[in-house]
Image (cartoon, rainbow, N blue to C red):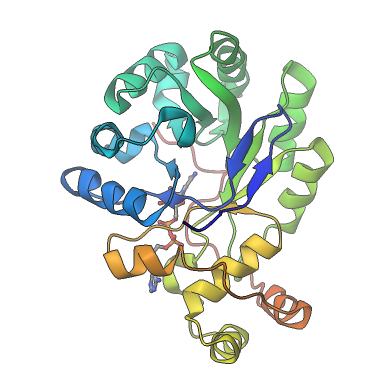
Length: 276
Ligand code: NAD
């Protein structure tokens, strides 16, 4: 089986650099899609309470026969739960749905910064980590100013910050702030949901290496050191997105893809997204 590189996080744990994301995977398909991913060789699954598919993920894990210590499972705390002071209850509910005793990584899904309640949530996350219910704790969609506030008021540095990153939106300011604090960067929507597959440097690299644009973009993230978990529900694409360890992009190809930055966001802006 393909050896996926591991990244060592600032708390000493390690995470497979390439995983499988399940946002927008319908609840009734999640079990079969995750089973397909595990069969392909993925050992890192990225879900969230708000995705509504933790039960399917849990069912696929339970029937996979894969030892718990060989799997890496991330889930996320939704905003309304931490605003209601329900951080601990929310993880208990996620663990029950996932049929797990602990997750490997628990993330604050969005800062929703209007009232800074994410700082109280972070204190609760620290307790959940010391209780052993999550191995690592981290954040998602945090801007540098939010990381600064966590650094000022918290005791534990987030292990990761999961943000939207793809060739058309590289968020270099956030990546720099992450590095400054020793926080690993996870790229969400790493393929820009397909929107960059026609871009010339990506097409050229795909032709040069005899691979697909999706495989080029995945290699670009891997070689730039980011953790990612592309999503697909199509078996051929699930396999294709994992089959990325037989070629290497040149420095010139990586630079050309870096040059595609155009501040093109597919999701919400963390400064102004305050879901209820
Ligand atoms: P993605 O960039 O992984 O794109 C997925 C889409 O790209 C698929 O639906 C399909 O249309 C297409 N695709 C995938 N593989 C392909 C291939 N080989 N060939 C052609 N097309 C292909 O987007 P995503 O699902 O938004 O992001 C990946 C994961 O990131 C999510 O599943 C989730 O786990 C995570 N995520 C997190 C947040 C957050 O706020 N923390 C937000 C969005 C996504």
